[in-house]
Length: 70
Image (tube, rainbow, N blue to C red; front, top):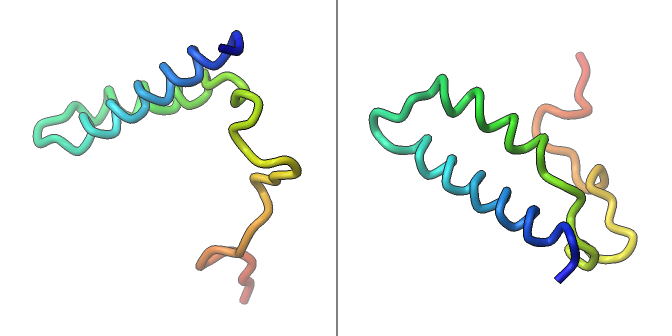
């Protein structure tokens, strides 16, 4: 296994668990708002082979509300 694969997988799992917690009744939204961005920023580079060669995360279709100006 690559050196960062385990860290990447563990962080993704924690983000998923946080998302599940955030959907529960009585979840501490302040905690979710503080921890979510911290976990997301701590994601290491994706392991090799996670995305196809030449993948551009900024490429793709425009989403509603993007690229429109009055």
